[in-house]
Image (tube, rainbow, N blue to C red; front, top):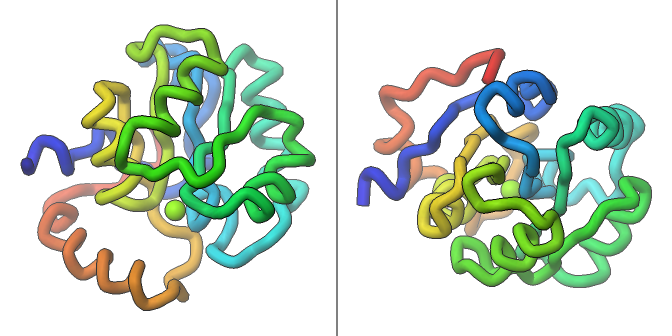
Length: 167
Ligand SMILES: [Mg+2]
């Protein structure tokens, strides 16, 4: 179980991940969580910074698919300015969203990494699927109570982990 809850990398922010770093690890596709990974939870629309960051990854040959457990309207509205594929109601940590995303990217699963802020959805899901997992620090600590509860259970698994500024 512990292994399933261990990420391949612990990074402070999505902006610390560069296309060159990804390629160095053999990664050519990213499955992206929305809430507290790309924007603070409850932020409806993407900001310029995150849009240009994702576009720049795409321009450098990194494919991206947004995979969120949120509902259709939320994911659709958010994903629009990126002009990339997305999966809503993904049921992370279960495999459906990951399978669809990998299929959309047309990559081998060994070339794909999940980037997310939650151990029990993003990292666990990635590990169950056998793809790389990158855990980042949540953008905003103000979270709804079900997630705050999950954070308590995450703590023992994060105790000795050092979050870095570089992948
Ligand atoms: Mg999240």
